[in-house]
Image 1 (cartoon, helix red, strand yellow):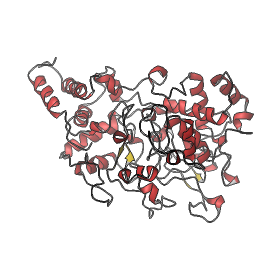
Image 2: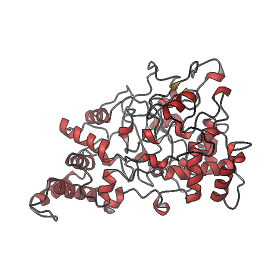
Image 3: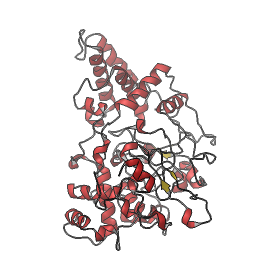
Image 4: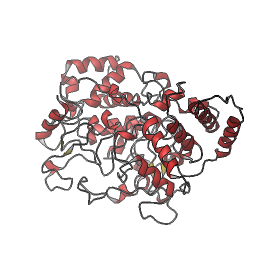
Length: 468
């Protein structure tokens, strides 16, 4: 969404053909049919020869066509186990406060109601209470503070917003700085020194497993987020979990932590927004999108150049993308420490993004490009939550400016004013908010988990909010 698209001339040619009756157009075509034809021509011109398939998401059970790590092949049994573990609050037993045991899960900060984000500015696992309708009412429990001198009152919060798990299967590395992921054959973290990529004594040490980012994040995240799947956890003591685990790993397991994490990752790879209007349109429902959504899509992939950086089926980055295609310095602000919704501080490494992880000055202030589906589920955008509406983000990118004061030359050279009109900003916003909105993400949430606990959080106030 940074430069005028190189394909604008191809798009303009397609428009001329359409106006002259060429390219299969008809003078009796409806506005939607004409716009659909124009969008088809635009997408074909930027698809690298793949056509509409370059942007089409697979069905969630089409395991053969879902991107995956060969060392963690997808199976229905593994996905079923992972779905329960992902939502299981009874795994939360390694917290700092005994009064909070069993009150959080992976889904506490990545749940369906918020497009698999947290629904609030700073996600809270242990130390939070309440939920609301989409996570918007979750707050720090009394006394909890990330800078508290009492270790039993330090909540599990992060100094950046919770990235979406939705469509994450299309990215090789995880977290805003890409620190998780070392897949065999991977490109993004290739060449990083061992002490950087797999720093001993830190969660990054899990990169020694040589798995993709989703798998590493799931495995490392169990420890980071104070959950347990070993020893006498519910995974070992609950008969339903034992049945699920044995079905997922019929040959047994010598690495329960790793295999539990792989199951969670397998489930996460199936969380795909394939029922959105744009996806239905790509599959042949020519009336699935409105005129404004179609106009916005034509701009997004054409003149506005948004698709130059938001690529592939998830509109994040393509499978096999290089580091330069995944991380950008565009000047979004960090968390505001004066905001009462934020606890803790943003340290220098976090503020430097990719550079804070790699140690390379050329990577400073770069952050991973996010996927763009179901943005309308929250009002939190950017690694620092510095925007609270989709339109504000589009309007900001239209200016080509930076929110954050950065050294000269840091902002990506692909960032420049777009020259969009207010109507064009509205059209792109409608495409993003409506055409990319899957209305049925709750299909990825189980009706219950083996513990019988409330999900995705299980404190007293959340139980009232959720009616469980």
